[in-house]
Image (tube, rainbow, N blue to C red):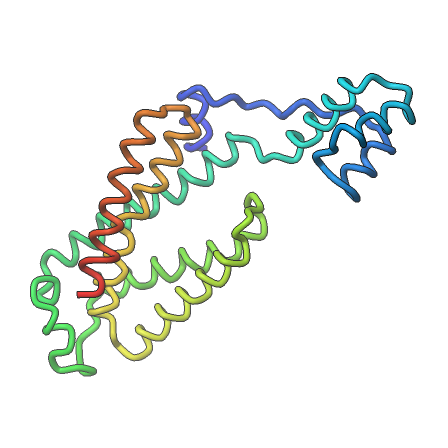
Length: 224
Protein backbone atom coordinates (compact mmCIF):
# COMPACT_ATOMS: atom_id res chain seq x y z
CA UNK A 1 0.00 0.00 0.00
CA UNK A 2 2.92 2.37 0.62
CA UNK A 3 6.04 0.86 -0.96
CA UNK A 4 4.48 0.24 -4.37
CA UNK A 5 3.25 3.84 -4.90
CA UNK A 6 6.70 5.06 -3.82
CA UNK A 7 8.33 2.73 -6.34
CA UNK A 8 6.06 3.94 -9.13
CA UNK A 9 6.74 7.55 -8.13
CA UNK A 10 10.51 7.12 -8.61
CA UNK A 11 10.02 5.55 -12.03
CA UNK A 12 10.05 1.80 -11.37
CA UNK A 13 7.65 0.15 -13.79
CA UNK A 14 4.91 -2.22 -12.73
CA UNK A 15 5.22 -4.65 -15.62
CA UNK A 16 5.96 -8.33 -16.02
CA UNK A 17 8.97 -9.38 -18.12
CA UNK A 18 8.39 -10.53 -21.68
CA UNK A 19 7.64 -14.25 -21.64
CA UNK A 20 9.45 -16.54 -24.02
CA UNK A 21 7.09 -18.41 -26.37
CA UNK A 22 6.47 -22.05 -25.32
CA UNK A 23 8.99 -24.51 -26.79
CA UNK A 24 9.37 -27.95 -25.23
CA UNK A 25 12.83 -28.65 -26.66
CA UNK A 26 14.36 -25.33 -25.64
CA UNK A 27 12.66 -25.50 -22.25
CA UNK A 28 14.18 -28.93 -21.62
CA UNK A 29 17.65 -27.62 -22.49
CA UNK A 30 17.10 -24.56 -20.30
CA UNK A 31 15.95 -26.54 -17.25
CA UNK A 32 18.09 -29.68 -17.53
CA UNK A 33 21.31 -28.68 -19.30
CA UNK A 34 22.21 -24.99 -19.41
CA UNK A 35 20.69 -21.54 -19.27
CA UNK A 36 23.62 -20.14 -21.26
CA UNK A 37 24.14 -22.39 -24.30
CA UNK A 38 27.42 -21.99 -26.20
CA UNK A 39 27.67 -21.40 -29.93
CA UNK A 40 28.00 -25.08 -30.77
CA UNK A 41 24.83 -25.99 -28.87
CA UNK A 42 22.97 -23.04 -30.40
CA UNK A 43 23.88 -24.21 -33.89
CA UNK A 44 22.74 -27.75 -33.04
CA UNK A 45 19.40 -26.47 -31.75
CA UNK A 46 19.08 -24.28 -34.82
CA UNK A 47 19.36 -27.31 -37.10
CA UNK A 48 17.06 -29.40 -34.92
CA UNK A 49 14.33 -26.76 -34.83
CA UNK A 50 15.01 -25.30 -38.27
CA UNK A 51 15.23 -21.90 -36.64
CA UNK A 52 17.67 -19.00 -36.83
CA UNK A 53 20.45 -18.98 -34.20
CA UNK A 54 19.65 -15.37 -33.36
CA UNK A 55 16.05 -16.25 -32.51
CA UNK A 56 17.21 -19.07 -30.22
CA UNK A 57 19.58 -16.68 -28.45
CA UNK A 58 16.68 -14.27 -27.95
CA UNK A 59 14.51 -17.08 -26.59
CA UNK A 60 17.11 -17.99 -23.96
CA UNK A 61 17.58 -14.34 -23.01
CA UNK A 62 13.84 -13.83 -22.57
CA UNK A 63 13.56 -17.09 -20.66
CA UNK A 64 16.32 -16.03 -18.23
CA UNK A 65 14.68 -12.64 -17.71
CA UNK A 66 11.38 -14.39 -17.10
CA UNK A 67 12.84 -16.02 -13.96
CA UNK A 68 14.33 -12.80 -12.62
CA UNK A 69 12.33 -11.15 -9.83
CA UNK A 70 10.78 -7.80 -10.83
CA UNK A 71 12.58 -4.70 -9.61
CA UNK A 72 9.29 -3.51 -8.12
CA UNK A 73 9.14 -6.55 -5.83
CA UNK A 74 12.75 -6.10 -4.72
CA UNK A 75 12.10 -2.42 -4.04
CA UNK A 76 9.06 -3.19 -1.88
CA UNK A 77 10.92 -5.80 0.16
CA UNK A 78 13.87 -3.47 0.76
CA UNK A 79 11.58 -0.59 1.69
CA UNK A 80 9.92 -2.70 4.37
CA UNK A 81 13.30 -3.59 5.89
CA UNK A 82 14.52 0.01 5.58
CA UNK A 83 11.42 1.32 7.35
CA UNK A 84 11.76 -1.11 10.24
CA UNK A 85 15.52 -0.64 10.70
CA UNK A 86 15.20 3.15 10.65
CA UNK A 87 12.25 3.23 13.06
CA UNK A 88 13.72 0.72 15.50
CA UNK A 89 17.09 2.50 15.44
CA UNK A 90 15.44 5.84 16.22
CA UNK A 91 13.42 4.20 19.01
CA UNK A 92 16.51 2.48 20.39
CA UNK A 93 18.77 5.53 20.33
CA UNK A 94 16.04 7.66 21.94
CA UNK A 95 15.57 5.08 24.69
CA UNK A 96 19.28 4.44 25.27
CA UNK A 97 20.18 8.12 25.28
CA UNK A 98 18.44 8.41 28.66
CA UNK A 99 19.85 5.12 29.98
CA UNK A 100 22.95 5.20 32.24
CA UNK A 101 24.54 2.12 30.62
CA UNK A 102 24.64 3.91 27.26
CA UNK A 103 27.28 6.27 28.67
CA UNK A 104 28.95 3.87 31.09
CA UNK A 105 28.96 0.23 30.00
CA UNK A 106 29.89 -0.89 33.52
CA UNK A 107 26.27 -0.13 34.40
CA UNK A 108 25.27 -3.11 32.23
CA UNK A 109 26.46 -5.42 35.00
CA UNK A 110 25.58 -3.36 38.05
CA UNK A 111 23.39 -5.45 40.37
CA UNK A 112 23.15 -8.17 37.68
CA UNK A 113 20.97 -10.26 37.37
CA UNK A 114 18.57 -8.32 39.61
CA UNK A 115 17.93 -5.50 37.16
CA UNK A 116 14.42 -4.12 36.52
CA UNK A 117 12.90 -4.58 33.07
CA UNK A 118 11.34 -1.30 32.01
CA UNK A 119 8.41 -1.13 29.61
CA UNK A 120 10.48 0.64 26.93
CA UNK A 121 13.21 -1.99 27.14
CA UNK A 122 10.67 -4.82 26.97
CA UNK A 123 9.04 -3.46 23.80
CA UNK A 124 12.43 -2.81 22.22
CA UNK A 125 13.42 -6.44 22.70
CA UNK A 126 10.07 -7.86 21.62
CA UNK A 127 9.97 -5.79 18.41
CA UNK A 128 13.50 -6.84 17.46
CA UNK A 129 12.76 -10.50 18.21
CA UNK A 130 9.49 -10.45 16.26
CA UNK A 131 11.17 -8.82 13.28
CA UNK A 132 13.91 -11.43 13.00
CA UNK A 133 11.36 -14.22 13.39
CA UNK A 134 9.44 -12.65 10.49
CA UNK A 135 12.59 -12.40 8.37
CA UNK A 136 13.39 -16.06 8.96
CA UNK A 137 9.98 -17.25 7.77
CA UNK A 138 9.42 -14.65 5.04
CA UNK A 139 12.54 -15.96 3.29
CA UNK A 140 10.41 -18.82 2.02
CA UNK A 141 7.94 -16.45 0.31
CA UNK A 142 10.24 -13.55 -0.59
CA UNK A 143 12.52 -13.46 -3.61
CA UNK A 144 14.87 -16.44 -3.51
CA UNK A 145 18.46 -15.27 -3.18
CA UNK A 146 21.82 -17.01 -3.56
CA UNK A 147 22.63 -16.48 0.12
CA UNK A 148 19.36 -18.05 1.29
CA UNK A 149 20.97 -20.63 3.58
CA UNK A 150 23.52 -18.17 4.99
CA UNK A 151 20.84 -15.62 5.84
CA UNK A 152 18.58 -18.31 7.31
CA UNK A 153 21.37 -19.40 9.67
CA UNK A 154 22.08 -15.73 10.44
CA UNK A 155 18.45 -15.03 11.37
CA UNK A 156 18.26 -18.24 13.40
CA UNK A 157 21.41 -17.31 15.32
CA UNK A 158 20.08 -13.78 15.90
CA UNK A 159 16.80 -15.10 17.28
CA UNK A 160 18.73 -17.47 19.53
CA UNK A 161 21.03 -14.73 20.86
CA UNK A 162 18.17 -12.29 21.51
CA UNK A 163 16.18 -15.00 23.29
CA UNK A 164 19.20 -16.15 25.32
CA UNK A 165 20.06 -12.62 26.48
CA UNK A 166 16.42 -11.93 27.39
CA UNK A 167 16.04 -15.15 29.41
CA UNK A 168 19.28 -14.41 31.29
CA UNK A 169 18.32 -10.75 31.80
CA UNK A 170 21.35 -9.54 29.83
CA UNK A 171 19.08 -6.95 28.29
CA UNK A 172 21.20 -3.90 29.02
CA UNK A 173 24.20 -5.10 27.05
CA UNK A 174 21.78 -6.63 24.55
CA UNK A 175 20.18 -3.27 23.77
CA UNK A 176 23.59 -1.78 23.04
CA UNK A 177 24.42 -4.61 20.63
CA UNK A 178 21.04 -4.34 18.86
CA UNK A 179 21.28 -0.57 18.44
CA UNK A 180 24.86 -0.86 17.22
CA UNK A 181 23.84 -3.32 14.51
CA UNK A 182 20.75 -1.35 13.45
CA UNK A 183 22.81 1.80 12.93
CA UNK A 184 24.17 0.57 9.61
CA UNK A 185 21.43 -1.79 8.41
CA UNK A 186 18.99 0.95 7.37
CA UNK A 187 21.76 2.65 5.36
CA UNK A 188 22.36 -0.54 3.38
CA UNK A 189 18.66 -0.87 2.58
CA UNK A 190 18.53 2.81 1.60
CA UNK A 191 21.42 2.24 -0.82
CA UNK A 192 19.53 -0.70 -2.33
CA UNK A 193 16.42 1.46 -2.80
CA UNK A 194 18.48 4.11 -4.58
CA UNK A 195 20.02 1.43 -6.79
CA UNK A 196 16.63 -0.01 -7.77
CA UNK A 197 15.41 3.52 -8.57
CA UNK A 198 18.57 4.05 -10.69
CA UNK A 199 19.78 6.99 -8.59
CA UNK A 200 23.39 5.91 -8.99
CA UNK A 201 25.07 8.91 -7.38
CA UNK A 202 22.80 8.68 -4.33
CA UNK A 203 23.37 4.92 -4.19
CA UNK A 204 27.17 5.36 -4.22
CA UNK A 205 27.01 8.06 -1.54
CA UNK A 206 24.80 5.96 0.73
CA UNK A 207 27.02 2.92 0.26
CA UNK A 208 30.12 4.92 1.26
CA UNK A 209 28.30 6.17 4.37
CA UNK A 210 27.13 2.63 5.13
CA UNK A 211 30.67 1.24 4.78
CA UNK A 212 32.05 3.92 7.09
CA UNK A 213 29.36 3.41 9.75
CA UNK A 214 29.70 -0.38 9.46
CA UNK A 215 33.46 -0.32 10.03
CA UNK A 216 33.24 2.17 12.90
CA UNK A 217 30.43 0.34 14.72
CA UNK A 218 31.23 -3.32 13.97
CA UNK A 219 35.04 -3.17 13.92
CA UNK A 220 35.63 -0.26 16.28
CA UNK A 221 32.91 0.28 18.89
CA UNK A 222 31.53 -3.28 19.07
CA UNK A 223 34.81 -5.07 20.02
CA UNK A 224 35.52 -2.29 22.52
